[in-house]
Image (cartoon, rainbow, N blue to C red; front, side, top):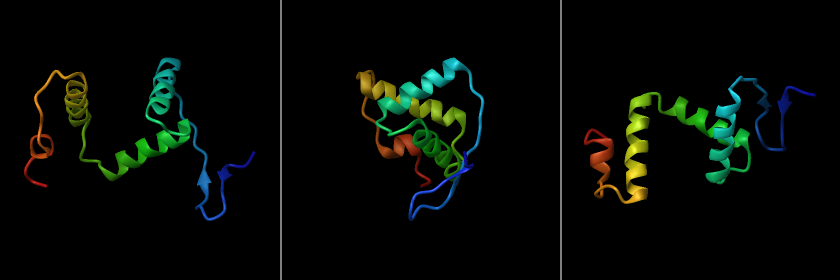
Amino acid sequence: MSNTDTKSGDPPKTNINIRVTETFLEDIDATWQEEGYNSRSEFIRDALRDAVRHPDLTRESWKEIAAVEHARRTGESETFSREDIVGDDE
């Protein structure tokens, strides 16, 4: 098997290997399917792309974003403006 995957017009892609626990893999699989991705690889590429493009978002800021989103979806919070969430400096 080749270590690259290409489709016409797409830049070549290289395979990488990572190790995760079975439990984490189950979480990944549930998430990509719930979010409507076509594949696990597509989901992981997007996650990695976000991490590279937004290195200033720390684990703590992701936790805050997740908490606000959870509260919004469950109706446990008031409505937040964009400025409340991202701040005034953008």
